[in-house]
Image (cartoon, rainbow, N blue to C red; front, side, top):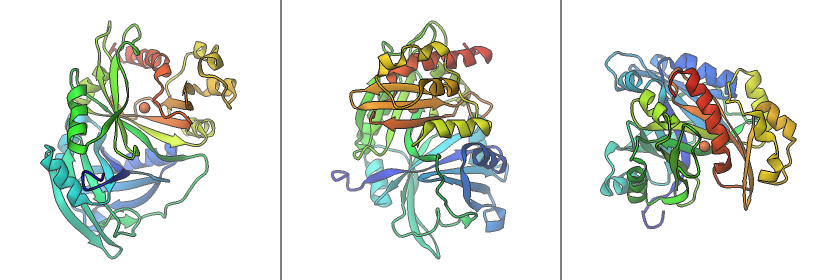
Length: 363
Ligand code: FE2
């Protein structure tokens, strides 16, 4: 950002704190097609924690577990269960990003530091955001290794057809009344803009209701919808998240594909559980969203949702929660012109989520 003195280029990676990184990395590899490209742990001299780096095209996840009892990672898992600790951004200048953010009121988590290995050096820094979530700034222009210094290469990156390509957006759930303060934080600290929003008049079923504002950085490569529960007849799904995560936190990651039908077909056969879409959703679909390239029976078979705006349409589907607590889940999205967020699908989606909430006794 010209007026900030640094630029956020895009999402760099997400770090998950999990109870058993070895097994979790296997899950993401076998079901969602990620490749384990790098590792650090006892064998590489990391005595306190172990991490596996999962890659799929431009998407990088780091799954980290503690190796000792006295660990802030263990505390995080104790409070939140498995979840996302760090939404890291790639920046052109990690020192300027940190200084500017702290000067504008962010709490420092990591002062800028240089880490290096024979493939070059990286400068990293970090600030706090909502709940226990942080944003790291990664300046990697002087580094040629597969991920970050300190990791040992496991497998080279490889491109696969019909897979996931990049992070489309990352959603943060807030407690009631906290959406506006958190959006103000992104505006003030990072100079982001409001990109899109929905309120509870757009989205409420008999039970659930939510408000959402999408914040975006200057080049719009980073989009973060910020949600809060709104009053409905019964408990909002956002409130269920807050209750089980025990704070604000990351609710879902939307991952983009160029062929959602093939991708979802593969993931389902690998055992990924998706939310079901009621059959009536597909009645008169084209009269709601206009002409689409896909076969509607095929979309219905896999439960894929469609929404459109003046620029085109998008296809999307949501997984069930990826861990025992009803917290983090993924969205698979294919955009065909539309840059919005599926407002027309919220109702169908909520009805489906609420069926699952009812089964969990949390509605
Ligand atoms: Fe989403």
